[in-house]
Length: 90
Image 1 (cartoon, rainbow, N blue to C red):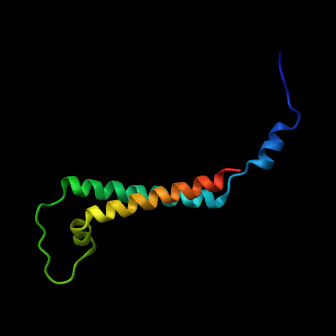
Image 2 (image 1 turned 45 degrees about the vertical axis):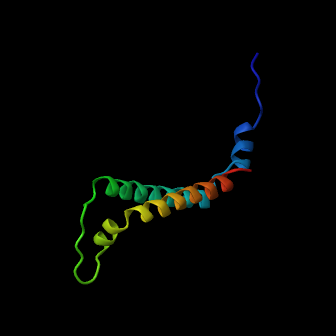
């Protein structure tokens, strides 16, 4: 037997539209995920010793604190995923 619902695609598109805010939170989660991966690799293959003279550059800061950067970026990525999933549910 074949069942058809007249106007199903129109009803589906009217009720289930993608929220632009959902895409924003997804992109933000991807950015924080990339930061997490980069800082995790810095933990694994980073330098054993770091000598800082004068002001600290961004790369020196990244090499000095990869653990807290990884932790914070992981928490922020999970938070963005949660917010995005809340926006996608009806």
